[in-house]
Length: 227
Image 1 (cartoon, rainbow, N blue to C red):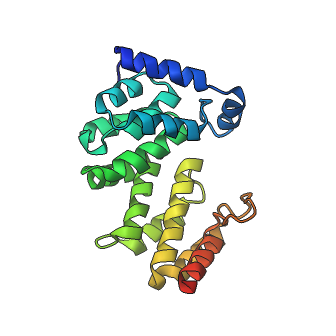
Image 2: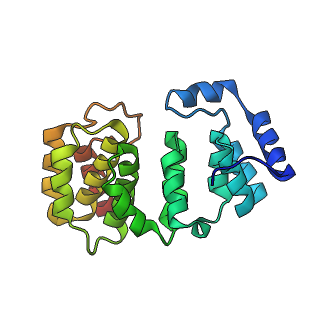
Image 3: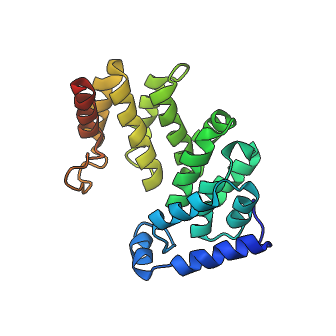
């Protein structure tokens, strides 16, 4: 999907995104590695107005601009992308928010999701691998049949402690999801979390659940049992 903006429609959208730029929003986003200054609520409102436009989405992605790429992911047709195209997009998705939206809003809805999950899971690039783990977490929650859950816990136990940040976060989410959704593996998942202490001291806002797996698992199970 690489390329340059060529149509008047894309140029108009880029101008509108530029007008929405807010230095204060950019300053906050840059702390999280996201180099754009557009309020996401305003970005979503723009996407709602534009509706689905696959060709425009391709052009916006091709600009390389983070806000434009986020907008592209909101107005594209997820099932229109080929497997190799999605693979290339993920590898050039520089910022965390673009990476996250690409996986969650596009790849998860793609007919190529399972093939990409398997390929990315074993990728030597930890950012690419984190996408494989995110897709695996989705399967843990919704379609666990065929997954080797004890094997996943083995990998988490061996590798999560020293994994780079984004991969570590994705592994931790998978660990928590296994503990939440699968009672037969819950004690082991909690035990791994307690031993590794990954994200144990992560600052959590009032009313939010800690990402520390033992706390996360206990809280979500408590909510499910209280329903």
